[in-house]
Structure formats: C-alpha cells, structure tokens
Length: 313
Image (cartoon, rainbow, N blue to C red):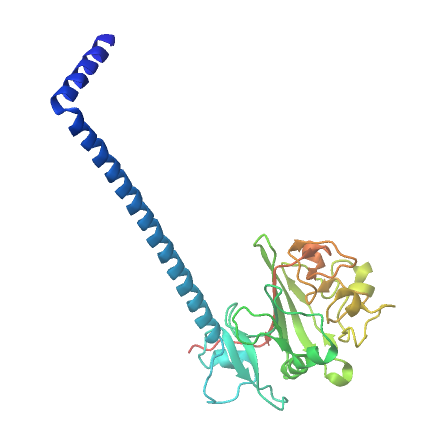
C-alpha cells in the first residue's frame, strides 16, 4: 500500500513537471469559475422555484376566491323554492347559497344548501373558524347574521327564517360536529321545529339518533334532564333572558341559544381551539362527546323534510 502511495506522488510530481505551473494555475482558475457558475445557476433555479411556488399559491387563492364568489348560485328566478330539498329534486346538486321562500315567509332569503348526506339539507348554522361573533343581541339572532357568500363562511340563518322554514311540515335536524383531531360525529333529531316570535322562538324536537350522544335533549342520564334538556326552551340572548337559570345564561356563555340551566349543548359559544379554560363553559360545547371544557372545531346545523325522497334527475 505504501509503495502505491509513493508511486502516486511520483506520478503527480511528473504530471506537474509536464503541464507546468502556469497551466495548472489556469486549470484551478477555470475550476473556480465553473464552481461559481454552478452556484449562480443553483441560485437562479431556486429563485425560479420560489416564483413558481408563489404563482401556484396565488392561483390557488384566486381559485378559492372564485369558488367563494360562485357560492351564491342564481337559478334566474325560474320558480320559488320552499327549501333546499325542492332545489335538490329539481336537479340542482351543487353545494352553495340559493334563494328560498318558505310558504309563510313574506320574502325570499339566501340559505346554504348542503347536497351531501343524501342531499336537500337547508343549513341554518355553521361554525368553521371563529370569524363571526356569535355573542349578539336578540335582533341579530332574529334576522340572521354572518357570511352568506363564502362556502365555508360562518352564519346564523335567523330565528324568523328558521321558524318559517320548520313550520312548513315535519323536519329532521342533523348536526355535524368535527373536533381538532379531525374526528367527526353527528346527532340527528326527528320532528324539529322552531316556534314564532310570539313564543320567543321556542325549540322542540323528537327522538335522537347518531354518534355524538344526546346533548340537546339531555338523554345521556335521566337525572340531568331537569337542567340539560333544551327541548321546549325559548331562545335567549344577553338582552332577552328566557332561560330557567337564576342568572342570565346567554350573558355568561357569550351566545344566543335555547338555554335551560344553562346547557349540555351550546353550539353558538366562543370559538376556542380544543381544550380551554374560562370562568364558565362558554365554548362550542357538545357535552356527550367532549364534555364542557373542549370547544369544537366546526359545526353544521341543518334541516330536511322527514319524508324527503331523492328524485332521479
């Protein structure tokens, strides 16, 4: 091995003698220039990659914005629809905001139609990112508020509109819930109805089914129904107290809702990101799934006629 190394050195020395020191210098200089050019090319490639990424991101944002703009779907006044079930059965299967006019409503209004889960669902509440303030007064909840353009925007359809909608017949309520770990559950209630303003938008519903547990009717234990059952409760806001509590549930829980004393479900609560601490359990709560001290990531509350049958269009 040592003999080979000695021979290599001898050969290298002979090569230097043959080439000459000036030629060797030129080689080194050319090598340095080439290395510099390679680095410059690498820099240009990285710059181009960044530009491509930025253009793709910009295109994605523009596409997302375009989707948001297209979330309001104009059917060009072909006819009036009483709910999203009628729209679905007319052959319109795209999710989005459509104009509907329940039979007793004096006017049309925009409602989000969820065409998944069998289609035909009229959404009256959505929580997705905390972008909307749900700690509002009676008039806001009565008329409705929020983002009625974006496909994932937060909103409350309005107690008045909800009354007109559910007073048309026998409606099923479905509540879709998602936590911050990505798990999804749902709760479904038969015969959901909201009374009129003269009854303070009292809520009633029937049998529960689903995977999230029965928080709305307090069905998780017979001894808690006296305070945890939200059925038959009038709607409450911080300026209109209709609960069974000595204080004001809506004021304490920072939301309008069908409070009892106060709740085992409050889907209009403050938007926290999962587990939270506060003076009261004022997050987006569904007790039978995550308890009082975990605020859910997203909620969709929607209704559909109980006798809904999909037409083949």
